[in-house]
Image (tube, rainbow, N blue to C red; front, top):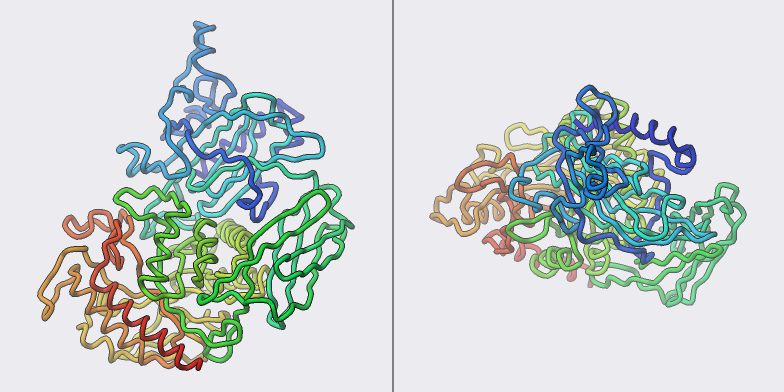
Length: 627
């Protein structure tokens, strides 16, 4: 498993850096910068054609006795294997990266070749690119949007660093490793997970191993804006928190500009390179909302660096059992979705067009204003598109099902993933909820673990709400929300599948009553039923997996939801049929979870129209109440 991989890699890093002291001073094993809003910096894209080679026994990391890999197996070696073999008859290579197959990244290896469909393990990627040495006064970073699950990065045969976690960005400094002319980058990506990982191996979605988001080479000034969080505070001021990276970060002047508002405010960083300031804002500010998703160009200036972003300004808070957006109650008309593009053979390549196609189905097709991006941080392409289109977002980390609550390393991994997610997306107005978990069984160890995450969220971002998808207790026709985590959350959320995973006749579902000893707003974060698109049945007595059953399930569940006085939103499961190896019914599933309201290719099922009509009525009621 990848723990063995990383142990061997660590030995390799030590060996190489001992052999090259200069590299030891410049290269670490952990990410060296945040580079927030990196997609706005216009760095050099390294997307496109890469060679790939599977390594199921990880001999590119260690030999069969556990010693470091020998010359015949070092996928990351800074050589052209064919050239060396041509010059040296004694040379032996049991790989050849330059003559290995080519894949176009980003995208999971599930689409590289038919035999990769269910591959789990280590795959090596390599490409070359032309560059010049980093100019004086500049620094260079390799920045990855994500690699699933664990990645080790090498540049020109030198170890750059490693990252664990399949859904958040990471960056490594390569200032002193770039050379004039051709540069070789090699990445070993290991998709295998253990019971100590986040998430653990057992899930209900596809493991899309590989480099699934964009890779950039970014050049910045020696001291640069590493993080800039710009937001509207609940008392109506625009605030900015800026953190610099570099030797000159202390006592540096900072200026934040929003030209469209004719707004500018400034300050000076402290000794650690941080500064927070705020300013009053005029009535000219148009607050971001699903009805009016206004975004402003924001410039953060520090020395020779300028960081640009597109930011919307809004507030979100809870009052009693209401969720308030810009001070007014809002009902979240949503749906859940996985990070998987439409099509018969998705590879988790989320382009702006792919994101727009999915989110437009929610905004225009379902009359929605909300999306739960489950069960892990989705691509920043998706969250930016939500900003643009006007969809409120629930964002979460993959603390899912069977987490090892007592392992301190597991907790630290979860905390780091959550931090990386929040710091990446704090400027996205669309995000209103950070979720710390999904369907986790109650225990003292679990409660302590999740309370740590909740505390971290509040320390990192006090402008949004905290939630978690919980389970409830049922006795007869009464469901009680009794999870001990509820008092720690801003918003309660419950996954419920009465009528699908329970023996309830659908006609009985509206009779189920919901109670909570705590007064807080509730979201039905999941409910749903499988249906194979095109499979129809007798509407009077429909069977499971038919479109008629799914449609009736929605009618009855929505009737139940209408009776819950403190319900303030829904994100049914799920927008689109998605790949899940645990779903193996040979007729209806075939490796797909069929709870989508649209098929994997975008065909709308009957239940789609049931929910769309319900949300149309809900939107009308909201507009009437506002008048």
